Image (cartoon, rainbow, N blue to C red):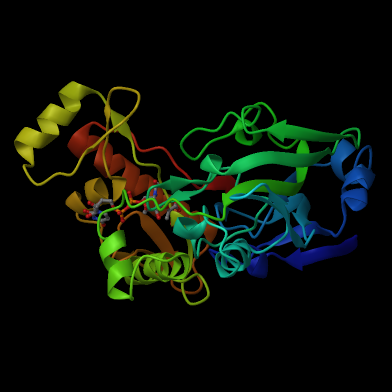
Length: 337
Ligand code: EPU
């Protein structure tokens, strides 16, 4: 394990917020993770387990230990004729994993191309995009307890996946360092084209293949979402809220153009980006904190914004959406103090 003290986290969060942490631990092996159990890092001071920091916002210097998995490696095990289990170390870059699978003809992750983050963080918030959620292909999650060092395997059921949610954000929060994630993929891909325009984009690229679907997703993302390598951001800042039928009816009658998605709960999912745009925030900027001009659900750091400035902007947005629509936005990004 590598230990750094009093070090900047700027390179360890995709918002590019320049705060320091007292200690940064880079975990290289599951044995390193087991060593955390009962250590001063986890038994006494406060600590935070992260991946690439692509879904969090630091408000201030972190007075504790940031623990980051760098457990690397991808292996595949064939399972019968059309199925393969791919095992990825939690520190594996997410999109490297997707590209690795697509280039070998393993289908299931292609719609999740180009999402910033690591393989280990994917199940924590059940990443999703273009009609796919990672829960659809997760076989199991192998994790090391930071309290007693034991290894536990969480089946997909144990993970209790929901929209951008899992057991690792709730009752098991902070208790496990995910070491490895197992994905069940298919060598006879079943494409998922629920997202409007995805199939057409793949066809424009020459036809429906894994590689073209991956490229189509990359193209669509590139048109809407800022690349954290150039502009700090953490993807969608809020979740898309689910509203009751009456609210959906009210929105439809007042805004005939509104796009609503039926939710399994019986209500309707409203695009938060649309709500924020209707409140006039799209493309607005205060100092270096802003609302992305092509996607109002994404808050950005144009350079030197502090976490607090971005947070304050997000609270103003939340307030105005509530005042205009009576809908309370819930953050997707985790706030860290
Ligand atoms: N919209 C607007 N104005 C905006 C943004 C969006 O009117 O400024 C409308 C769009 O026109 C569209 C609808 O809102 O009708 C949905 O927009 P989009 O397809 O861009 O997706 P989203 O609901 O804003 C979700 C995920 C994204 C994921 C995309 C694509 C959440 C919170 N976000 O965004 O995930 O990439 O769908 O599937 O569910 C993330 O979680 O960080 C993330 C980027």
